[in-house]
Image (cartoon, rainbow, N blue to C red; front, side, top):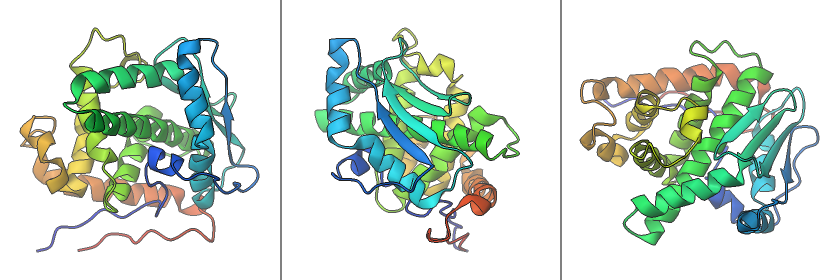
Length: 270
């Protein structure tokens, strides 16, 4: 019997954030949906993030991909800013997803300490930032569309990020495994001051669920999660069913909010 694959709930939604950012001159997004803002930091040490992301049209590219697929009931701003905290956030009042420069700085430090090589550190950085931004977008969609998520908006954000990375991974993108490796390393450094973990209540249990989704989607890419015990061996056999059920639910959630021109998700396969 062939293993079932997860449906791609947002076909071609994201290649990976840093991969998208490499495309200069992003197309103008459809009016009224995701827009981008770069706030210049007051701290000079963060200028490099501000300048590089703006130069590469990072947020414009992400917004363009999201706008190509989704229709929102109101505009949402994707923003980079100096926040005073090493985290990311979604504000329903201002309808703003914020990636803090302090978060980028902390991720870069942990990735550099945890990876054996510079190229791997860059992959960990990319994976962590990709996951975190998609997680905030997922929480935003949960509130904007009033989705009936069973475990709360925070967990739903994790799920959205995981299934979107799973879809990208099937096209060869490495961000999924890098994100798991990064957060495993971050959780092993409780004194690092990385505030994302606390502000998002992201603990070993939450990492296990995300890792199970990704393992169920592509087991051979995530053997390290099994070997390190991130996904318990007792849970691993059911992860394929978990990802299929989860992605099918998100397909149903978003079906009424996708653009007519967006590629349809292919559904489950046997």
